[in-house]
Image (tube, rainbow, N blue to C red; front, side, top):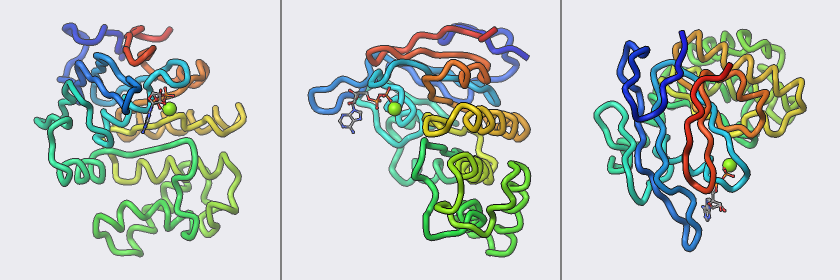
Length: 240
Ligand code: ADP
Ligand code: MG
């Protein structure tokens, strides 16, 4: 299956409708313009790499797509909802039920064990502790880090911590995972391992991934690449 359609044009090779369509996004922070007329279309299950230099607006774009930052203009259509206009409670529900998040670092709760960290999204959704932790342990095994289940994040290596974070991002079986430079703090060997496990696990569970990265080796795991420059998006289509 290939996903090579230019954005905002008919996509005959896609059997389904887009999962998320952002168009005309603009956002400023005081005098700084972070996004200008940015667009992105995400199809179910596809992995899109968002690339571009530091300060070009990648994180702001990701935050707008995920309902974390409200754009000043434009729309983000997801499931009959325009996230640019949705209520705060609808946005926080979506972030909990439909979206998973993965950041560069600092996302695990330092006081909790790794298995408790991975179980946390299920616990917040009301699952009993034992069942949530059993599922969490399955995910840790899948990501080949079961050995750190009882450790705190501070006792893990960087690569182990990111694999725990991948497990936590996927445990609710989100429809979209938003990953912002998830390998940015890792050496190339561990970065490669994390990105391979993230993309494999996402494909297995049918999640789409928006993957912000400035590393071409990481972007190579995506189906399609979008470049952000000075707050504007450009779709480079499929990757060889
Ligand atoms: P990238 O992720 O590509 O490095 P960002 O989206 O983080 O880029 O930032 C784009 C521009 O917006 C930068 O000039 C940055 O300084 C500015 N910016 C982003 N977030 C904020 C914020 N919360 N407050 C002020 N300026 C911000
Ligand atoms: Mg950023």
